[in-house]
Image (cartoon, rainbow, N blue to C red; front, side, top):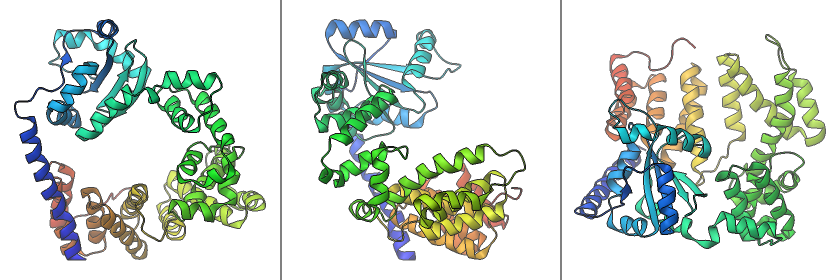
Length: 433
C-alpha cells in the first residue's frame, strides 16, 4: 500500500512540471485574446452588432486565483487569441469591488451587478457567451484547459447548438430527439426557464421508443428530469432497477433516484411539521413507505432520514452510528469510475473523523478513505486519510501522510496547521460539537 500511495503522489508533480514547461514555451511572445478596454456593456453590445460578432465575457474577481491562471496561461495563447479575436468581441467584467479600482472599473459596477443577477454568476471565473444581438448563448466557468476553452467558443458558434433556433423549431412542432435532449438542458441552465425545460424533457421522454429508454444517454437524461413520483421516469427506475444499474455500472443508480424522490415527497413534509423538541414518528413513516414501495425502500429512506435528523439536532453518537450503517449497507461495494462516489465517501469519512470516537466506526471510515485515495489521489482525500490515522492513534503514519499532503498543496495553511498539531500531539478534530 505504501509503494502504491507514493507512486500515486509522485505522478501529479511530474505532470504538473511538464505542463508548466509546455505552457512557458507556448505563451512566449504570443498574441492572445484582445479584450475591449474602456467600453461599457452597452457599447460592447453596439460594437458586436455593428461588426456582426459574437460576445465573450470573462466574469472575474480580484481575489480569484483560477481567474489569474486563465488570464496568464490560456488567454495569452496564440491559437486561443486567433479564434476569439476573429469571431468575438471579448470583454472583462470585474464582479467585486477593490480599493485600487480605477475609474473604468468603478463605472462598470452597475453593469456587473446587473450581469450577476441576470445570469446568476456565483462562481469565478464565469464565462458568458452572447449572440451578436446580445442574447445569452452559453454559461460556463472554472479553470479549464486550452482545448476545453476553444471548445466553448466553437459550441457558441455552432448553428446546431443555437438555443434560439432550436427553440423556434421546437415551438413549430419539430421533434428531433437529439436536439430536444440538448435543448431541455440548455433552456434550464442557460435561460433559467425550468418550466419550459421540463415541458421539453417530458415531451422528449414520451417520444422515445421503449427500447431506447435503456440507452445510457437516455437513462442519464431521465434521471436528470425525474423529480416526482408522477414523472414517467419514476416507475421506470422503480421497476427496472437491476437492468438500469448494470447499464450504468452503478449498483445503486436507480435506488438513489427513487429514494431521493420518496424522501422529498414523504419524509420532508412530515419533518417540516414538527415543533421544537418533537421526535419524528419513524415507525409510522416506515409503514407508509413500506406499504407502497416495499421494505427495502422503507429501510433505506428512513435510515438516510435519521442521518440527516440526528445531525440537525447534534446528536453525534446517533448521527455517526446511522451514517456508518448507511454507507456500509447502501453504498456500492465495487469500485467504479465515478468521481461523485469517491467525493461522497471522502466527505462521509471526514464526518466520522470529526464527530466519532468509536474505533469501529473510525476504522470503517478509514476503509472508505482508502477507496477514495486509490481512485482519486488528491490532497483533500490524503488529508482525510491522515487525520483518521491520527485519531486511531497511528501518529507516525499520520504525520508521514500529512507531510506529503503539505507537499501536494504547499499554499494551503490549514494542512500545515494540521501537521503542526499532529507533531505536538494535540487533537486535529473539533472538541466542542
